[in-house]
Amino acid sequence: MNWHVNILTIFPEMFPSTLACSLSGKALQRGDWSYNTINIRDFADGVHKCVDDTPYGGGAGMVMRADVIEKALLSIKEKGGNSGRKIYLSPRGKPLTQKLVQELCAEETLTLLCGRYEGVDQRVIDAHEFEEISIGDYILSGGEPAALILMDACIRLMPGVMGNTKTPNEESFSEKSGGLLEYPHYTRPFEWKSLTGKIFYVPDILKSGDHKKIEEWRKEQSKTLTQERRPDLL
Image (cartoon, rainbow, N blue to C red; front, side, top):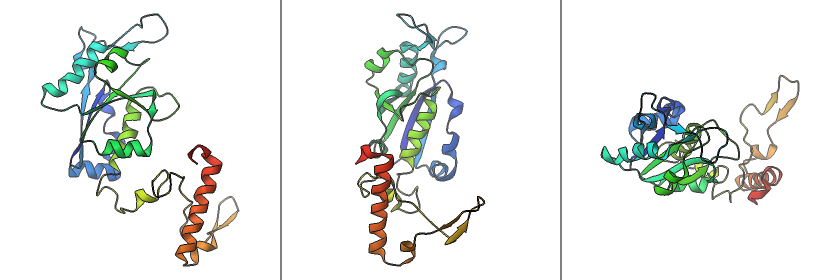
């Protein structure tokens, strides 16, 4: 299955950005996923192609116009495409969790709306039933970086993208880990002297060869880290 993403943006040049590199870039070349950028500004009227206007009720900033965004959205179907599941990247949306990423990855097509300025006119969200998704409790200059993060999280879960199929099952937030944070990792050399002058060692348990005890140690480390850093996950 080819996973396809339509991206509504006023900065189409921001894509595919980092997604053209590494594993996601190879998957793009193979045709495992594809994307289509729709420049919202192409659907604005007038010489200046304005996509925004002052907010009703007053206040700072500008608001992206519903009529212009709608034309951009409908152009997908007019050109023979499918909008699929429609998402507006917004700080007031529901959190992007690993469970939601797995859900979105299973969709054939997504349409991501990248807002700018103070946001978009609520009416286009309501009219076309965009669901709002947030990548975190902070504000970005626009939805494009958030769209890239959402796409990256989905692409890496596609069959064949990651070399080791066991990797997703052992990561933070995975079902196998019980939703806990991932345990610490170590590799050679066993004894390492940092440039700070401090000497560090790999925990002896990891050299024991006792896989049962190693697994127990890792589970305990995950619980401890989660308790310290993300007690909300417990």
